[in-house]
Length: 253
Image (cartoon, rainbow, N blue to C red; front, side, top):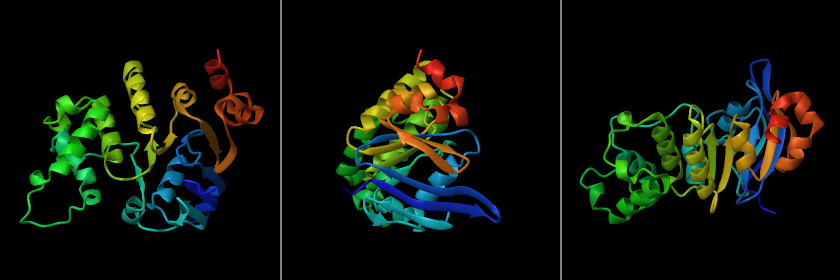
C-alpha cells in the first residue's frame, strides 16, 4: 500500500537535546488524521520536519511514496503537500481575493512575467472564487485581510493552504482562539476539505479531535505512544496516564 505520509525512524535533535525520538507513522490516503499531545511533545517540530522547515537528524519521510527527506519547503509543496501555521501567516494589506489567488498562482502555471496581467487569467479567477465559496469568504473577497475578524483570518489561511494542487494538507491548531460557534464552522470547513484530500490536524481541542478524526496519533515527549481509531484512543489506559486523563473521560460523557 502507498501511504499519503510515511515517517520511518524519524529523529530530530537540537544539539544534545532530542525532540523527536524515533517516530514511525503511516497515514493512509484520504484519511482525516489527528495528532495530539501535551505542550512540548514535539508536534510543531514534527510538522516542521514533514514540511521541510527543519532538517532531519535521522530517519526518512515519504509523501505519496516519494522520499521528501530534507527537501526544501517549496519542493515539498510542489510535490503535493501544503500546511497552515499555528500563528496566522497571511498578507494583511492585500484583499481576501488576492491572498487566495497568490496561493494558487504557481500551480496554475503562472511564472513571473512583468508584461502579463494575472487578472486576464480567467481560470485563476474562477479557481480563486471557488476556494472563497468553499471557505465562506466570497462575500468578503474585496476586504483587506487586516480588517477581518480573527476567525475569518483563520478560515482564510485554510483557504490559502488548499488553494494549490496539494492533496496532503497539514493544519496546525486551526481552531485556536475561536469561539464555540466559530469552531463549529471551522470543523465543517475541515470536514469538507477532507472529502477529496488527506488531512492531518494538530489540535488541542479534544471535542474537535474526536468529532473530526478517523484516526488519532498521540505524541508524548517526541514519541508516538498510540495510533488508533478514536474509540480505542479514548479507552487506552496508556494514553490517559500519559496525557489525556480526566479530559478524555469527560469527552465520552
